[in-house]
Image (cartoon, rainbow, N blue to C red):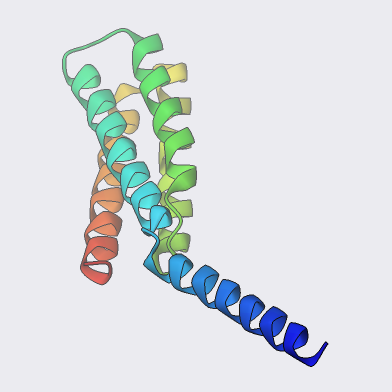
Length: 129
């Protein structure tokens, strides 16, 4: 009986050590998700700015802004969280301005949001090499 206990305890210890070491060696998928969200958000805002510069369809511009607002939700980084919220507010204001036909204000808010997201991504990249 004593031998059986020792074998069982040794087996459990080996299994728990293997589980811990495999978790430590696993790839950090959270960082990849955050980085992809930042890149996709920037791409969508740049798309909206490009469409606005070319005098594109209002619905296409609004769709690009809405897509950017959706993808930015995954860009979670504690040091830039408040800045992300403010940039999202600028995207919302840009969308509202496009809907009301105020393209000058909308374009300015889009460019401000783009600058904020580029700055946030640079800060994230600097801290996650």
